[in-house]
Length: 543
Image 1 (cartoon, rainbow, N blue to C red):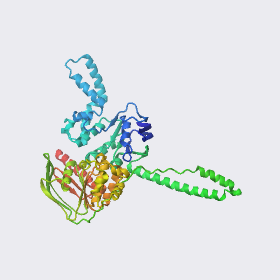
Image 2 (cartoon, one colour):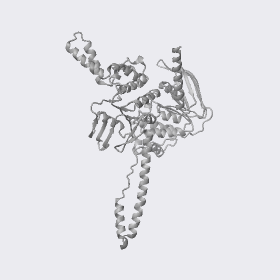
Image 3 (cartoon, helix red, strand yellow):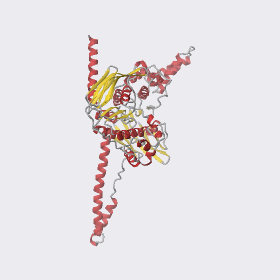
Image 4 (cartoon, helix red, strand yellow):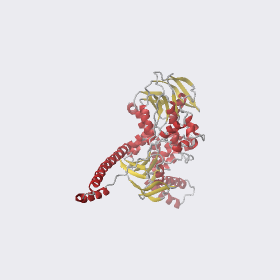
């Protein structure tokens, strides 16, 4: 068990947390939610002991081991992949290193023998004999091939490093597991594997995530950060949302009844306070009136941006024809003879482990890159707006958000642009922020604003949910569901893909898999195909 006792954290005059008391118990998975800036990641750091609270303390059951998903992708560059994972249990790794050093001695003494015996006993207690196989199982489950296990971490790409750090956090059956955005940069197969791992995990998990499907799948409880307090709910994210809305509704209804009672008592007192025969009743009602307290209903600190894509022109039947596109980058074949045609009702989700292939295709279709072979043609009635995965180049100047967005606005009026930005949560002086100081979420909202102003009837969106909070993801999700144009997109958010897409494309080394179905139907068919493949292999072995 891990608990926060009267925890307060002040940043200047602002209290990020105020007298927080909460217990996280064994066998439960807690989703830590809250608006951007509410302090989710900070609270995890307080629990992990990397940030000291201004007041209060963190208590952990004696003897329990806490494991944290680290965010520094370069910290273990000089370690081999398998060793990095085993470092998840630091004591076990230290024992392995000391054992190896003792056994490597040429002048092995009696004292060395005694020490080696002590280390072997502790090594066995920590399941050391299974350490390498357990680490390999975690890596394989997350999609790190066996031939990479003895490579150095510096040789891996960014996505692979994230998986190694996640495997390190999961290694050795920690008693308390703290995960900050564990699904970021994971492919959908790795996310599915992680979901099953956490569902079967019997210890304490506290996780921050912007993936609603993931939270619904793995969480038994929800801890909601709002107004410097943390309120604990039993149930997953959807249950929290329904419960919190129901609580507010009940409080409003209770207040309405109290207000009616107050009005009734006030009318009686006003009418009969001067009447001698009714004075006792009037006095009694005054006492009753003083006892009635309305419930304080504070509006949530959560804010939803107004996202609404409205095409300037209705799209025709001819949308996009892609014929035989191939592209090689730095000697790696990203696209190989890709062909497909889009209709005017298509909302296509691109899935699969090779996210770089999808980014390459999107850049080609957006006109940012030329294919090595093949061609594509947009219909004459189409207009495109592109959301790049890497938007860094857009935000290097010290121009203000207002000045930047003005160049894309159909109305060259500051009042109009600032009103537009206000709906996208850039209110007041926020619109005067410099581009080069914006956070990841603010950058995304800027790009979405630019796309909305374009009036395009075809949207190309490469991981638009990255860096957004749950409220912004929900607003974007709902907007794309009702969007009347064509969408080509990729996202690691399961619920986002399931509710938006009506067509699934997977770019594989063997070509394009194209299915007219929902994402869940695609996964179900894919799982059935895998089971058939395994069954056929077993039949061949038996034969």
